[in-house]
Image (cartoon, rainbow, N blue to C red; front, side):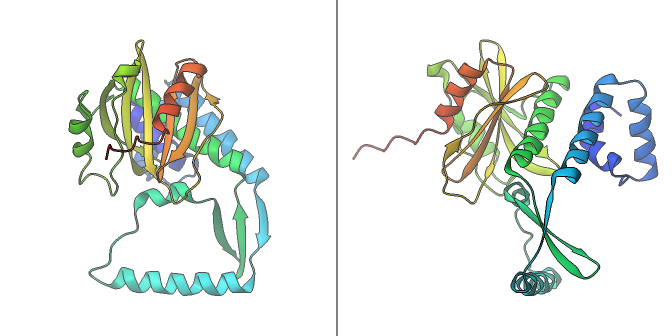
Length: 258
């Protein structure tokens, strides 16, 4: 088992959710790989932090009734042969979870900073995997009209693709990637030999913003939202240049001439 496979299995390994064979393979790999051991330790600390810092609030009866109604409706749709699965990217927009403990409903609120940190860790892991496995692109092209159609049929959304070669950030391709087991688009750019990964997925928000940079394992991460898409940009490029690139991604598209 190679590092990329182990990185994808660290969370279920930590939660003891792997089958015995896969669990033994991961454990055997961890015996000789300090990088994967360090990644496991970071995930363990994050899990402990989330468990410690989550706030629990009793949900009102109206919310309980609404959730029960939606669950019954979802079960009915799932039983129908023509039912369609919900888009796999919606997990990224969830800011709260509902739990049932001893017949009592609770709402668990994840602090915004912790949610961003959790996604940032996944983004950085994806960036590192692409560099370690020498698998930056599934489609290698500087032509946005080649890269964008390549995603058709592979995702349940169409990611915007733009080449910024004129500004010194040429597009080099794209690939499918996964954050916590869900498919997202990864666009790859270069700037002075620095690789930039841009992870893209839809978000149900009209709020357009560019958040301050985060730093994870020596990589800078900047995220924002524009035109219904979330952009998570990661690279070892310096923060100022990376922020300039992120602003171009989130810039409104120029209006077509009349």
